[in-house]
Amino acid sequence: MSIANPTHDETMTALVTWVLDAGLNGTAFEQLLENLCLGLVNAGVPLMRVNFTMRAHHPEIGAFFYRWKREDGITHEKFQRTNSNDVHEDWRASPLYHLINGNDHELRCKITASEKPYKFPILYDLEDQGGTDYFATRVEFPDQSASNQGDGVHSPMGLLVSWASDGPDGFSDIDLADIRAVTKPLALTLK
Image (cartoon, rainbow, N blue to C red; front, side):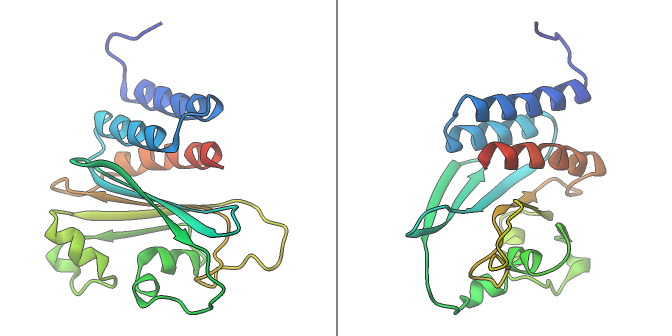
């Protein structure tokens, strides 16, 4: 059954249902993430870029990283597992590093002249690309091992997502509610 003119809530419910169904059907990560981002844009969320990062259950690969850009679609990288406790300075200066090493599950940074100087260098890059707002979320997957701590190299299992907007006013409260509504179902699907 299709709805001719769905309400915003119906659109978001359909998107969350689609994410869960895509996971159950084994949809490839790239397709799932691309369609999720396009679904949010179609629901009115002013996304310009989204980064998805997950630790890997793999002896050589430490993490998977997917980036969606409105103009370019999805790209991805794999980061090699390292035995070193050295943390790359770029990573240490990132909002995601701050997020996994703190107590919060969300971090928001407006990208406006009144917020300068920015706490994180990535915000200058996003500003140069037309960014106006940055929102990061994390969902941890419960882990029974005491060794799974967020030291920057061996971060907790879970999903980290950063969302960047280029809307004139950044993200609205409704946009953030929409992002929150899809984040945990997405984490469950990717897990």
